[in-house]
Amino acid sequence: MGQNLNPDGPGRTAAGTLEARGQLTLFCLPHAGGTAGRFAAWSSRLPGWARVVPVELPGHGRRLREPRLTQWQPLVADITAAVSEQAAGAYAVFGHSLGALVGYEVCRAMEDRGRPPALLATAARNGPSARASHAPIHNLPDAQFLNSIERLGGTPASVLDHLDLLRVFLPVLRADMRLAEVYRRPPRPPLSCPIATFGGRNDKMTDEAGLLAWEQETIGGFEFTYVDGGHFFLEEPEFTGRLAARLARLAGGDGGDGGREGSGGQ
Image (cartoon, rainbow, N blue to C red; front, top):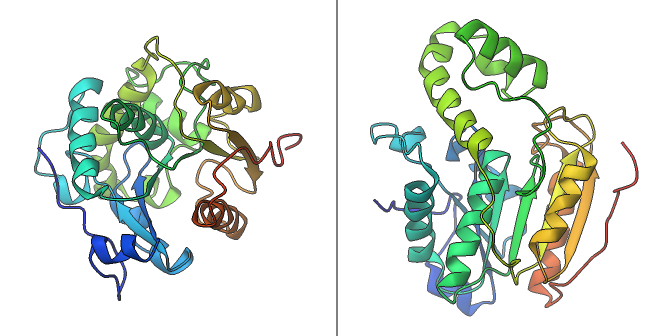
């Protein structure tokens, strides 16, 4: 159930050529209910040596006609197979919200295959072992579910304001929220790759203790950064600048612990 992961943006060459030039493939995983189109503009926002590869989940976006995978094991197997096809050289994984958990599980699977990433970057999601920042909502009736999502800031206003779009979006969002809320971290050793975690200062779906729990998931170095914004801070210049700087350190050969930037305040 693999997928064709073509990088976005003009002027990109084949993976082998990029790797020969010392460039990095960045696999990007979206939030609950989101699509790979969220990352369409990232090629122009990140350094030219970062080959941006948006990853579409089954039943979302370009893969909308495929069945949604509602269990963790088949979902991770699907995305791992897709990543493995294009992770020919150095690569990193970025995940936003639900995508952070998917990215973590994919990094685990890739490490088990002997092909660990250079970095796992997570955004807007508490660590896998942390307690959720809110009570489960995926089983609530539609009206209550949407009210809860709106209160938590877990869905872009552009979706909530359009009824026709919402009818299509709601089943996907509910299924994704279920995945996020039933997730339980299996007992396992930490990852060998470094982890860089980003949190929004006004995000109601995370908390500082939960974000810092990502440190427990790596022996390769941990870095935490607060940035402006709520749950959807990916368009904030502060975030894109910080992410680009972190990737630049990988390109320069520094993948280790950068400290807890901005961890001390909201």
